[in-house]
Image (cartoon, rainbow, N blue to C red; front, side):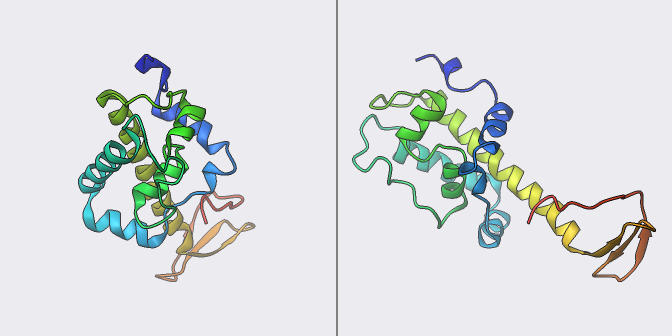
Length: 165
């Protein structure tokens, strides 16, 4: 298998995953976000490397399909969201054959995809926090009222659709 068969770009993979009802249902919970903030992205990346090396890279995995918990670490959530949770999903989504040890380059690509998903989740949450601060939007006079400061700001918003929940 050539590395080019894995995926063309992280952005393309994330866009494809967003179209899947199942994969797009995974979101980082507040506890996961706090973990990332407290530990830092470098530490989370190190954990992702360890999980990928130990749980995905070997050619034979006795409990394949069940090796990634559904909660307990932000990387686990990212693995399910990106279809990097087991060799079966890696094969289905990225054509990575089962029963063949992952190369270091493949492992790093998986880690990069996991971290890109986590980074996107962290940024999306910040956008969501901004909208949570808004008490309401008056569509007729285009005024935003901030819940924290109770101040109004004139803007050009015509309608409001939350970016995240």
